[in-house]
Length: 336
Image (cartoon, rainbow, N blue to C red; front, side, top):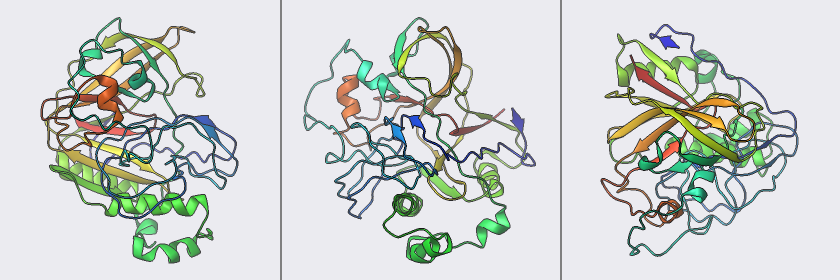
């Protein structure tokens, strides 16, 4: 799909009103200072959800977390295994399996299956014929508001009590916890080389894309295609094709955050990054899909104790790439 800045863009507007089963991505990576004793939920739904958690987050946070960080926004607590999620959430050693063996040497030829299960892989895993055990969660996204409507609503941690009152959301509810987490992500400091915005409307998202990529530049939107069926479980996929032609100087990644209306954490990081479209086929049912993969080559600012380094047999560093797939409904804007 190609766009210039006049584009109406993608409208992803599903509410999760019924029970859903999905895995969650961990895509977070920075610092919070609050203490969190409960789950962070990011899908807006009225019924209990059962899910696994998918990792896509990667750097360092400072806050104490005694409970799971979940990416489903709903009115009920959810039950889940050990993985943590939520865009830009850190891998807190108290929050999920971690390793303290930062002095361990890289391990060549290590089986990467456990990393695959959480959405991560190494640069060398991107080759035709490789078999990867994967699942692609479909994160439900709240409806967009117009820029005028969205800008009229308070959006800051200091105003959270008023925001909760506006939406009639109890302070200790799962929705309130997820909204708090979203606001913290938006107000958190950036990492080196990062430019970010929390877009509260499609118009503000497009304005940010224009700022990074250029207002007179045409661009396309990449994402991971919906798996068929949407509730596709963890299974083996074989790599059919890897695109090597997506070589762009700048890009904007936009990740939906848990909120009553659409909020996207959009950012660009000015360190070496490669973007790939990966064609996959399910070994179980023969279904094909297109996955969006991103490789970050400079991991020197990532949490060195992140379990993913142990699972991939590498150490964090300036030329120590870690790759991950985008969840469904997470967007990548690139110039064409």
